Length: 109
Length: 116
Image (cartoon, rainbow over all chains, first blue to last red):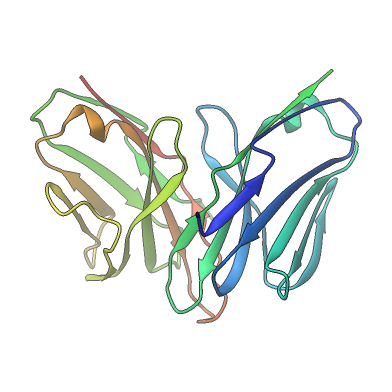
C-alpha cells in the first residue's frame, strides 16, 4: 500500500461544479502539500498545511491530522482548472516529500 | 525574486552519453531536492542536498547517478551512460528551512530528458 493515496484517480466534471479531491496518508508527517501540474508543465505549489484549513481564491484545502486525511476543494470550477493535482507529505524527521499518484481533473465547458 | 531555475528545459541524449541537469535554487535558499517523474508515474524523491553536503540520497539509483551542490554555482544532477529507462522529467525544488518542523518547497519547471 502506498504511503499516500489519492482519490479519485480521474475526475471529469462540468464547468461550475464543486470539486473535491481526497488524500489519505499512513505515516507521520510534518506538513502536507497540494500541488498542481498542467500537461507537460511544471509543478506549482498550491498549499502547504499542517492543520486546519487554508483558502486561496476558489481553492480550499483542509487537513485532519487525527484521521490522516486532507481534501482539496475547487468552487465554481473552470476549464482552466484542468490539470493533475498531487498530494505530497513531508515525512516527519526527514526533509523529503512523498507523493500521491495524482488526480487528473478535466473540467468541460 | 526569481524562482527556482532549471536548465536545460529539454535534453536529448543517445544511449551511453552523459546527462547533466542544473538547478539554481531561489535566492536565499540553501537546500535543494531532486525528484524524478517517470512517464505515467508519480513523482519520486531522489536526493536532498545542502551546500557542499548530501543529506539524504536514499532515492538515488545505486549506479550512474550522482548529485552535487557546490559552494558556488547550481546544483548538478549527473547521469552517466544514460539508458532509455532514464527518460523522465526531473524536477528540482528548494527550501529555506527556516523552521525545522515545517518546510515549504518551491519547484522548478523541470528538465525533460529523452534518451534515444
